Amino acid sequence: MGLRLYNTLSGKVEDFHPLDGNHVRMYACGPTVYDYGHIGNFRTFIAVDLLYRFLHQSGYNVRYVMNITDVDDKIIRNSARDGVNVQQYTGKFAQAFLEDSATLNIEQPNLVRATEHIQAMADFIAELAKKGFAYRTDDGSYYFRIAKFPEYGKLSKKDFAGMTDGARVDVDEYEKDSARDFALWKAAKPGEASWETSIGRGRPGWHIECSVMSMEQFGPSFDLHAGGEDLIFPHHENEIAQSEALTGKQFARFWFHVRFLLVEGQKMSKSLGNFFTVRDLVLRGHKPSSIRWLLTQVPYRSQLNFTFDGLKAAASSVEKLRHFDFRLSTPFPAGANPEMVQLAAETTARVKRALDDDLNTAEAQGAIFDMLWKVNTTIDAGQVFQDDIRPLRDALRTFDEIFDVLKDDDKDKMKTILDWARADGRENEISPALIEIAGSDQLTDEQVDQKVRAMEAARKARHFKTSDALRAELTNASIIVENTKDGVRWKRKSYKASIRPLCPVAIKLNQWEVHAPDHDTWGIVSCDSCKDKFALGPNRIYGSHTTPEDAVKELEDLLKADHQHGRPHADSYELKG
Ligand code: AMP
Ligand code: ZN
Image (cartoon, rainbow, N blue to C red; front, side, top):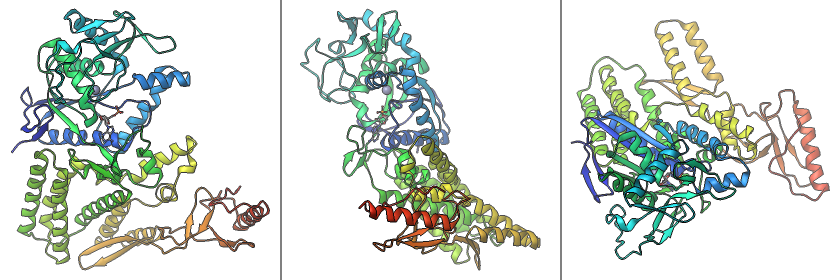
């Protein structure tokens, strides 16, 4: 079976075949770079990333283009407000988009930018005007005449019969039932960014860029056009009208729309203020791999409700997969178990079947976890052998070519965001959990795996000096290595510690379970007046020159000062050290 996809245009799940043999041309509407993207935006971008990867894995040669909207109403307004030009304003957020995409392992599409196509848009509009599909108003703006395009509404399934010819709307985003001529070109206004072109001075409306840039890349017709569900109307309806009016040919054949990410039942959006960016979540100590996994768990055509419990569960799933991968890398006795080889083949087939079925990611993940459970119990029973490992690992790798969470590079990515937060004046948002993961020299799972493997190899080769040294290194890093009858396993030592590190400097006594191998307390400072207790921690939270005595003294003074001024104690104190 080949790929079947839901096509918004036909309202049906259809067999997917590209127009041109093996060659797929797909276009996705990218971000409007007026701010940091939120994880709702990234739900859409990750869904398209999965589609792209799966097409590629299925043997297609895919050309994937995404636009960056670097001029629109909001950008014009914000750049004018900040007194900078459009490019200065959007540069930072376009860069942030690329960084956040990389953080989430989104493969980079071929990017095209609206501001680099202004004259091409003007030419396109002039052609539309020549054919009678566009008209110019007195101020020099241009509108699309929807009465001249009877198929208007075919994507969004809206019936616009009886609309008033000539009624206009000049904002980029408008009500869902608005059957009005939309702006293709807005004449220059004082104080707003504008460009000099063959149709006059002004700036493009939002919709024209995607028609112009996709057709520049692909010609009049191409295979697939993607975006979030909110783009169906008016954005994509308008793209179809502009493009098909100009060429008389079908524009995109498949329309792929991703349902919204919700927060407590409401759509996640900037305007509702209920959004999280990738950086917000990392600052709270969540790993990029957990975010990626969470956003792929629900198939793209169902709404996904964001919760922190869901994010924690995603972290644990990724952890299980990584540990499973590690387990398969340890030595096994010679031999083969035909059941395991068959399980690997079946799993790969099941993952493919699931993804072929309109990208059913939940079913694909279910298949890989079924394999994980079965293999783990079979390993426990001593029935997995050397020759089973290759097919099992291949099945896991094939799955990971799409989902991409096995590689453990979370810590480095989190460190980058930690450094960014410090440089960007967002220290107060850095959580203890982030410091714990990214601010320490803790070994990553991958590094531990490598050292454990090296230790085993050294032991087998009877290089005991090397294996002892590696074991000591692991012990120092609070890794417990166990030799079980099924081979070597490791886990991290975790402490039931009564301290909670508070960024940046003080540690308040609190009953939290923390993984804090190097958080030995220096001492506990009690407030004389209220008996509140504060624990003071290791020197990596202070400057290395700070002595415990100095820190204790300073904290005592601060606590006293609070009482003298009648203030409650703060949650954390900046100590000078
Ligand atoms: P924008 O930056 O607003 O142009 O949006 C970029 C992409 O994110 C578009 O494809 C939107 O449809 C999509 N998008 C916006 N909000 C959400 C959401 N809550 N869930 C999923 N996709 C979204
Ligand atoms: Zn678009």
